[in-house]
Image 1 (cartoon, rainbow, N blue to C red):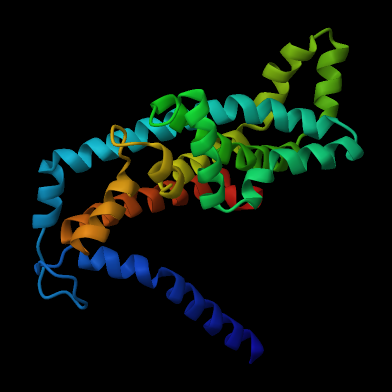
Image 2: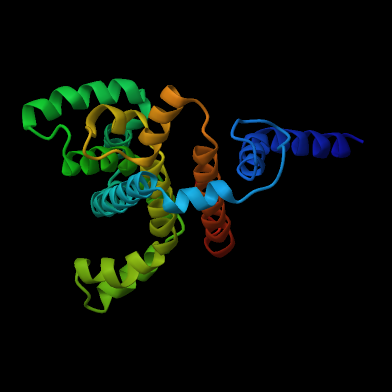
Length: 259
């Protein structure tokens, strides 16, 4: 009996969590110019307008370029950092982990205010490189967490065998360690891309008017014009792509075991 009750509760909780996504997706085909549920009719007009809207396409292009750049920078820093933390003794590891993971403990608004002051002194406020560095900083803790989880599945005997056969530490890392932790690297890259692409707070404060990302543009429109059906259609399209990526990552890499 309790087994069936738990199953029903699990499905109800899942439905509650997915309800906003389902409503937005269904409403993206709504023929009405105003948000209503259930939809008044079916139309693809809003998707057609999205494809013709240069401002939305430009904002999505900026968000995509920003996310890719931030992920590359975060992986370049996060992978060696995670490996070093994994190899060091527990006393040093706990202190350094707290330092690397500290951005996760700060509210986004506090972090953004601090960046404004720092970037003003450095002359990076409103620049693309400043935005990339800011997003890389919030991605690096996730990279370290996920790559460290992947390292836990690493058989260190293979590293010792490579070293015994004459491989240098660098060659051992690139030839043995890196391929072994590839799932964690790919998953952290996907996860970091999603975090950067959907960021609103930091991009709102430091991006300036030149680099308006998609989430910032949507937030501004919702504040000024209300819930536009075009924005709903764009959101539905992006959510669909993200869900497909997440399902493929789970199917091919079983990414849930690293989270």
